[in-house]
Amino acid sequence: MKRIAFNIIALIIVLLVVLVAAALSQQISPLTQEAKGPRARGEFTVTNQGILPIAVVLEPVSLGAANGKPVWGPLHGVQVKLSEQSARLGPKQTRVISYEAKCEQQPCAFSIFAKFAQGHTSNGIAVVIHLASTVYVCEKKKGCRESTLRGLGIWQDVARAAAK
Amino acid sequence: MKKLALCLMSAILLLTPAVEATQLTAPTSTVSVSITIPESISVSCTPASVAFTGTPSAGSQPIGGLITCTVNWNLQNTRTVLDVLDYFSSDNPFGTTKITAGMITGSANAGTATPFSDTSATQFGIAGFYGPLLGQQTFTSSSTNFNGSQIDTLQLAVNNSVSIPPGTYTATLNVVALAP
Image 1 (cartoon, chains in turn blue, cyan):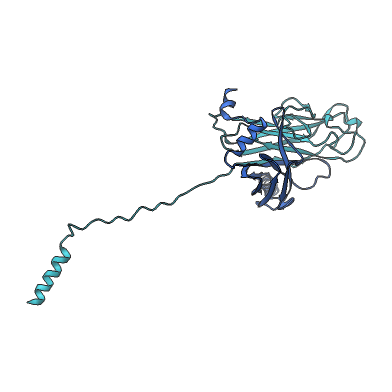
Image 2 (tube, helix red, strand yellow; image 1 turned 90 degrees about the horizontal axis):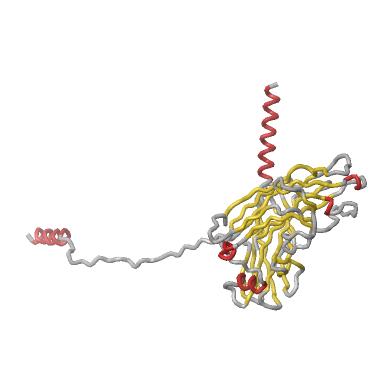
């Protein structure tokens, strides 16, 4: 009887360890990049920190603004070419994704959303995690993010945020 | 005699300290060291899916248990906000008009259950039907939380499941963490 109880407890512990390990997160980095345009080229990484394989779909979208808020929508005014549109990340795997972009006008900004989905759900609601890496392209690389967001009217510096 | 003199001379030369010798110092060479730690956000949500199986009801019934999302971030001090949002891409997330986004409610961190809607003020312009704001961090110049983590929970529920025809339905809930 004691042996059965011990085995059950051991199994529960193993399951908990597996679940905790499987729950480890998905990551994207860097979050923003600045480039001197009109052509930009770079890379970012997506990481599966879990122990189960995960699928990631990459979707480039334009970054704009409406009503003082960032707005993401279909690409316009910029062509973005990714080294991969989707990938399957093994446990603890990091994948480097490279991109090439050409902006029709400067400044321009676009985000690449990485959508992480684990497995297939045949019943119920599956949770998909979205993380974005955003590229700002300007005539001058330095300060491109700030100038682009200022131009869109959505720049909020930390000092101003503190005053609110 | 000559040998003795030679030995003495050698000893004197060897043992006499080089008083007037100039100290030689090699030029200082420098090695520049730089460390680059890119900004990052990571998110995990468990379980990866939730399901409702039960007797249809006119009331509200939970869809599975709590979805727990853990967000870790390491941001530059130019960020002002980090939002964690949850949304369905369409008003018919299960692929049938019998289940609309408005029939699904979300309760974030044990808060009020609110139906998913496309009028959320925090939707950040991504088209969708949003549930309650799952988590938010705000940053100021004096913030010490540019590197941190938070855990949020979300309980989904379905209203009026009695109107849903028998069948198996699937949907995708999008969880997005943004620090624009």
